[in-house]
Image 1 (cartoon, rainbow, N blue to C red):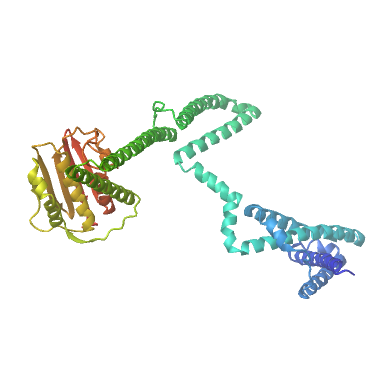
Image 2 (cartoon, rainbow, N blue to C red):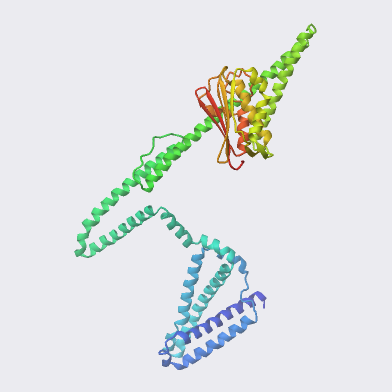
Length: 504
């Protein structure tokens, strides 16, 4: 005989013996013995046969005969796709049905032997089928639950977990969930009340009360639905870029809060659009200014280079042209170096070499570099610094560059015959350095744009500045986790630098 057919036959035999034996044991333990005394012969035949069948099924199982001749792995994969709670429910129901079939054999003791044998045969077939179904479910359920790594995911995918999540979402805003629950409860009990009032004449008096409160609730529901629809239409309009008037916020309900949040969101979108438009404008200005500032010295270099080719030039003219080319070349070099440095800082690729630095001494050194220019200019510098050292953990070269840029800006852009004020103070481990001067040029209302690259107070761009000084200075202070603030009051231009406690 083919091994496959042999295993199938043994499987069927084992199931029949096991079912018969299990039903006999359960019948002895659970059945009412009042039925047994009517036919003791059938009882003893049935019981002894069941015990023998149970022993035979155990012998077959202990000999490790392959009673499961098919591949369970593939079936397990399909079984695992059933939600866990549904699988447990199906296993429970099939087990209850199986136990009911196996236990309820008491009626076989009534009647003759042939009738009993016929009923036993039918019940044995039914019981075997249910034992097979229940056994498979319990087998696959056990192997599914045994894998603890998948148990959490199984629970999350179960219908019970999803229902709990849905209920949790419904009551995440408690007042909303409570109102919906009470409304549904009213509808449910109103329906029951109407049904009972139609069956019982004495209860017909409740109909007016149900109609009265029902109409009030219906009115409130329609009102809230209308408010909700207006919110949806408003949100849809905002998503299309339309700036509608603010929604009316009524009360403290969840819809009122939603309307208020959408109003705030609208202003956020509006500010984002304005920021984007400003960014595009500054980008265009940046390209224009870079082109202008690079082209101006380059044009001078090319022009005077052509003039030098004239063989009729005198030595004095030739020396003058060479001097102009040298100055324009140096300006172009500084401009390109500043541009690369500003770009490097803006990208965050600049590394700081911090050390303990006396900011007062560092500032005085930077100021001394411009001593001759200060003496020649008509700008009167008023400097107020502490007599004691003010130390900070900073990159000395970078902070010196900040001081250098700001002092140079004062000399270039200050109104003639005015004063410039520079002050260094320290309070609560915070160092503040303030630069104030009167601008020679009318400053734009958007003074915060002065820290943009190639942005200058002199918009006619007649001075030698690159428009990168403030941008570089702000980037350096930002890298030190400090503050770089610009304030404009008419022609008064003020820069305040603060190094917080983390750098001091």
